[in-house]
Image 1 (cartoon, rainbow, N blue to C red):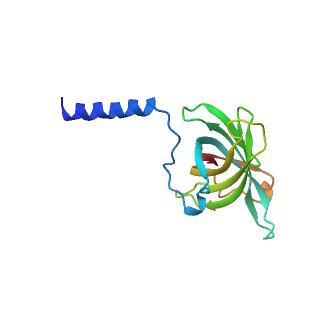
Image 2: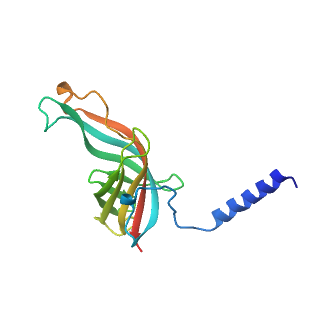
Image 3: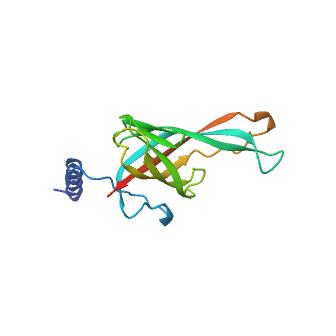
Length: 179
């Protein structure tokens, strides 16, 4: 058997073994210390999201005659590892599972995304605000691996006040539960 064939057989064995044994999700992303959940929490679920961040053109309160894009809300679908839709993310911020369970997040910490033109990474405290289900035991949420979602750089003026802007984004939400 050639070296290439041996390596291929070994990799196939690893792949089959990995698929055969269910494992807890493991974080492969490095986050700043301030975005780490409490020591009494463990990663329960990784939920990729795809959607938009919604902004509205508004007059600045701190500078007369100037205008800015103000964040309004997220609007995204949540997916499992196989790409099946498992819920949605919307204003509040809320994360709601298709089973009806949902949590409300409260910002604890934020850090700039490591890539340009991406919304910040976050750590949020989470509180169940719905029935028992897949999201009801979540205690913290990290938003990581963000792409896009930042406010438009231009187009906000007195003539555009009240105009919404929807910018595409993707992110991974790491759901943590008490140990």
